[in-house]
Length: 300
Image (cartoon, rainbow, N blue to C red; front, side, top):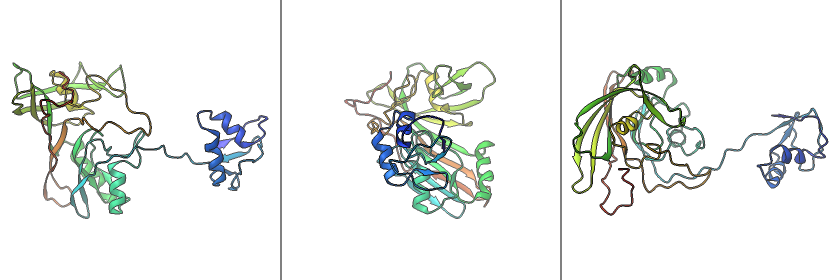
């Protein structure tokens, strides 16, 4: 809703063009021609509608254009209480920022016809792997409590540099908070640890200074695995946030899908708080070492 201020604009269209100079006049004309701008009584305003100070104008913000994300999730499990999906890289878990329709939640709600579906935990847009959803509202707190109370066991796989002389396996505990440099980044600071990760080596690349790691977080801080690996001098391959925050594509512009973040939520297990059953889910996705001639930056 917009309250029209005192002024001498000849038409509502002229006011809108001056009030919102970033929006082309043709856009407003098209919306008014479709009857999408209403007066206080709910009547559509035509493009030549006279401007009347102190009146009210109603319209609904159009969702921004979203570049399609050409990767699909797989449903690993579904019953009356729980849905478990295997998320691809680049697909957000829930609507936020520039993404609304191109999200795992929106896709599953449409595919399954379950408007009540909500995630009981989340993965970053860049991370692939297992995400669990609660079907029935009365069970949300019980399922979300699994992660809040650290009763869910999570296993991740990652590909990152190999450093000679670095002792692995090891555990890393630190305090994470939002970086003062940019809200998109987290940083390790002094203080009581709030993030804990066990890091294991599973394989080394035969010819490149790379390795495959198994990461077992017992906490769930934002970007925890990325920051803990970076703190060891092992930034994950394909990371567009650490150590350097790369610019995002413009709204509606197709992102570069050629170098996904090499981080996969590969396993999730817990005792179902509703049924009491033991649950164990495995991702069907995998991370592959790049070829020697690959163009993927190694961030070494």
